Image (cartoon, rainbow, N blue to C red; front, side, top):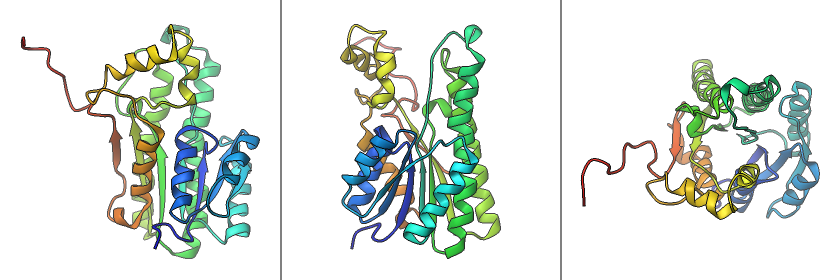
Length: 262
């Protein structure tokens, strides 16, 4: 029996990167997926390529009305909702003193408000069935530690970290069988890095520089993160809620050797 046979999932940011890979892995385990993304054409392409009956949905995660509509779609099309993966996110890097307010507002709107709305609306639908359900919020290492040139991104992802804990406690306190956990990846080789690559001689040079900061010696692949999301959304993790899953190749474990000679 496949792990997610007959389950229903919504994945935001599902048209690319971590969201796309998570959709593929969930579908391969029998899950019906609503691939949600602001880029509907790309989302539809992903949905059509999945191994289960799945659909695409154009979703602006910062819109409450859009979230109401996608929950209605999940209920009318598939009968409910078992899994929500909040993977949609944006980021920008700059000198803190020069950060445009528009960049700050955009990151909070997508990364934090989008996650808040997703959790809020998903719980209302998930609790109807009374079946075990799970929410996975994709945060970042930047949701646990600060970054000199990514203050806005860190602030938004830090909000996701504590929102996740609060949602987990809320569901437990209400007696809902709904778990909520956050995912904290290091650098991931996805399209989200493309704008940064322009500052380097090549994309590979960028990846090599990032990999030098990771003890395991490489950046993460979308499959690395998707596998962790599937674990947290599975019955195997039935006692895991309010957890921060760090997937960083040892980056936050401590300092590499700098205090001795070889």
